[in-house]
Amino acid sequence: MKIINRTTSALALLALTAIQSVAQLNSQPYAFSTLAGGGGYSTNQAGSAARFALPLCVAVDSAGNVYVADSGNNSISKVTSAGAVTTLAGRPGSFGTANGTGSAARFKQPSGVALDSSGNIYVADTLNHTIRKVTPTGVVTTLAGQAGNRGSANGTGSAAQFYQPWGIAVDNAGNVYVGDSCNHTIRKVTPAGVVTTLAGLAGSTGSADGTNRNARFNFPSQVTVDSATNIYVATDGDHTIRKLTPVGANWVVTTLAGVAGSSGSADGMNSDARFNTPFGVTVDSAGNLYVADTVNSLIRKMTLEGTNWLVTTIAGLAGSTGSADGTNSTLL
Image 1 (tube, rainbow, N blue to C red):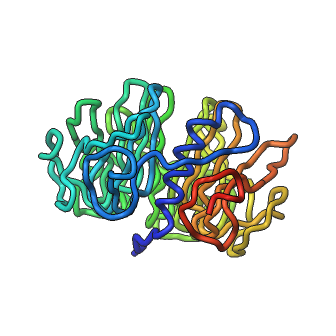
Image 2: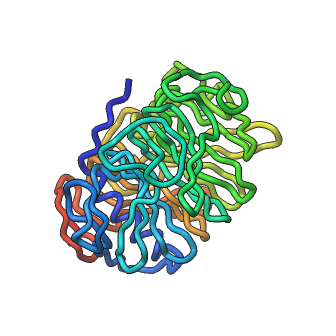
C-alpha cells in the first residue's frame, strides 16, 4: 500500500498555483507569492489566516478561483483570486464516504482535483478508492468506484474498482483520466461513469514503454491532459515523466524525461535530466510541462525542443526546503 506522506506538498501546491496563473505568459523570470495558508488545520479565512492540512493538488478555473484537495482535512476548499478560503465540500476533521451537499458530504484523504468546462470538480478520493464529482454549488456524487472496495475491475459506476487513485485530469469532452497509483495503471472514466484501463497492467510494476497493457508504471501520481488528448504522467515511484499518445484505439506510452530508478536534480535533455519523486504535473496552452519535483523541493519546466524535451529548474534550490516567496532560486 502506498503511504500518504507528502510533507513538501504545501510548497508544490503554492508553486503550481502560481504556475497555472502565469504559465500562459511563458516568460522568465517566475515570481512566486503565497495566496493562502500558513500551516495547521482548516479555518475559512483569507490569506495567511487560512489553514490547510496536507494540500496535495490544485485546479484553477477561468475566473482565477483555486480548488484545493485538502487531503489532511478530508475536504475540498475554494480559494478566490483575493485569497479568501471556504470549504466547498466535506467537513474538515471528519472523514467518510457520504454523498451530499457541502458539509454533509464526506471524503477520505482526497489527493487530486480537476475541472471541466462547466466548472464541475472531479476528485480522486484516494482512500475511498473512488472518483467523485462536485458541482459548483458543492453537490457531491460518486462517479465511479465503490467506497472501501479496492481493486482493478473495469465497469460502469460502482461496478468499477480503483486502488488509491491519486491523479486526475479532464479533457474537453468531459472524459476523466486517472493515475490509479497502487494499480500502477492509467484509467479513463467517461461522463457516464464507464471505466476502462488505457495503459499498464494492474498489480504489475515497472518502467517499460509500450502500447496499452504492455507498458508499465511504478506508482503513477498526478496526470494532466493537453488539447490533443495526450496524457502526461508524473511517475513518482520511478522519478520520470511519461506520456500517453492516442494512436487510433491504442495508447502509446513513452518516457519524456528522467531515468527510471535514478533520482537526482540535474537539468538537461530527456534522460540526462533527473527528478526525485515528482508528484505534480500540469501543461499550458503552448504545450510546456511544469513539474512539482517533490523531494527536491523544486518546480521544473519541460520545453519541447524539436523531438526532445529540455528540463530546467524555474524555482527552488535542490535539497533546500522552506516557504519563502521570491523569484526563481530565491524561492526556498
